[in-house]
Amino acid sequence: MLSDKEFLGLLEGKDYRMEEGIVKCKVNNCPEYDLNRECYNSIAKKFKDFWEKTERWQVKERQKFVQYLPPKALVLDLGCGQGRDLETFFGLGIDNIVGVDFSIGQLKISQSRNVARLVNSNFLNMPFRDNIFNGVWSCVTLVHLSPLDVSRVLGKVNKMLKKGGIFFISMQEGTGYKIVKREIYDSIPMIMYYYTPKSVKEMLEKGGFEILDFEKFHVWKGIKDRERRFFNYYCKKI
Image (cartoon, rainbow, N blue to C red; front, side, top):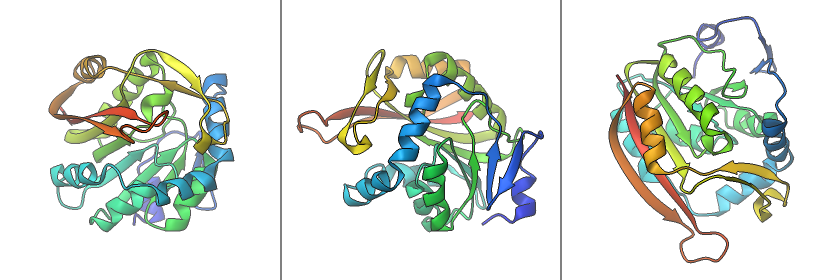
C-alpha cells in the first residue's frame, strides 16, 4: 500500500485535508448529488452486507482489467464504495491502489479492509495530479451523474491517466433518469441515470479514449423488479 508521502504526492491544490487516514476534499453543495450521498451514508453497513451475500459479479471483468495493466501499476477505483473491488484488486496483486468516493460512510468500511489509500470527494472535484495512474476502474458509479457531468468526469479521468493508461467503465443500460427507491437502499430516494452503449462510446471517443473491448450482460435475469442490463467498455488513453 502507498506510504503517506507517496499518497500525498499524487494530490494537488489545497482544498483537502487528511483526517484519520482519509483525504477529505472541499466540495460545493449540489442538491442532486447530496441526495445520493446521504442515501449511501445511511445504508453503508447494509449495502456491504448485501454485496457480500449476493453473487460475485464482475469477477472476470476485474481479472481482465488487471491483465491490461503493467507491473507495479497505480490504479484508481472511481466510486470505490465499501471497498469490494479494492480488496479484490489487492488480492490480484495490485499493491498501489487509491479509492475515491463521495460517501464517508462507505469509505469507513473500505478503510477497515486496509488495502488502499482513500479520498472523500465527488468526481468533479478530485484532487489528483495529471498523468499519474496506469488504470482507472469505474464499476457502475457514473450512473449517478448527468450526461454533461459524465463527459466532464471522462475528461478528468483522461488527464489523470498516463498515456496508454487503461480505463474500465460499466454503466446501466437505458435512457433518461429517475428517482428510485429500492429495498437494498432502505427505500431512501436516489437519482439514477441510464445510458445507451452508443452514447457512452461517443463520449469516450470524444474524451480521448480508444475502445479496446465491449461487453453486455444482465444481472438477476428473470427476477421481477430486479433484472438489470449493463454494459462495459475497456478503453485506452490515446
